Image 1 (cartoon, rainbow over the protein chains, first blue to last red):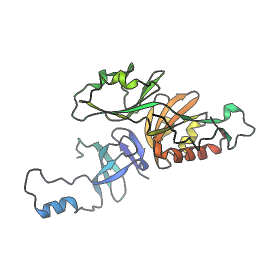
Image 2 (image 1 turned 120 degrees about the vertical axis):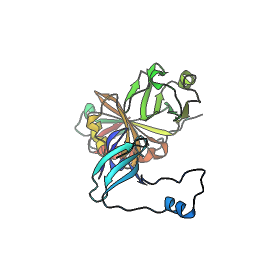
Image 3 (image 1 turned 45 degrees about the horizontal axis):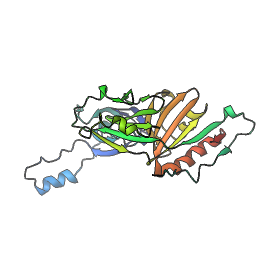
Image 4 (image 1 turned 135 degrees about the horizontal axis):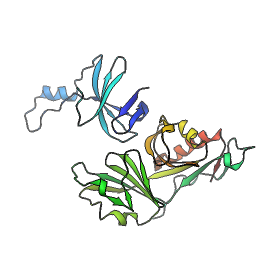
Length: 89
Length: 194
């Protein structure tokens, strides 16, 4: 089981969280013509990297906040967590 | 409105589990806490209200993972800009509705949507440990936390350290399942249902 450091509640067990997908996907800008391909990429297309990856997690059985987690998809090591308003560099 | 407990047909009074040859002080006590007024207060994201100066029944809003309380009201931190007010004052809403205006706050009456079970006794922490991954040894009187108990989302409110009293709150619809899980966890220690 992973232990994830929620930016609001501290270190908690994975049981309290829900995985929310890739945190690097950017929604196409509003009020601009969006091609079908661009929209398709945003909605469906995801990379599946091996190694460091920034993900969204939801502390669903805790403070109910979304936040970012930088995790190694091969080793499951967690490097950093950050609030949605913060960047992971 | 009449309050009908979700545990009405399952919470039986008596002594259960491994209670023989133990005196009453050694036994855990399990109690349903009913007829409390519960409000959720959420500050809107675009609100500029300064909550550090706000007052609710003579209490400031608590810091993360903390509880502020007086003899009738407890305010629990639920998340950023999110609090739970639990009180036995029937008119508690009237006391804070003028300060917590609907321009800045969403206030929801949850009084009928929660089941509260209180576990009391020296082994109360051990009971919670059986179903929750929370590092409960770090928490004590005046703390609160959301977590899970056998996959049921719960709120833990640490009422007292001596004697150990922990309130477990869950959605009303999970009340019966939570009651079964807690009573199962208490059996090996022996418990008195009051």
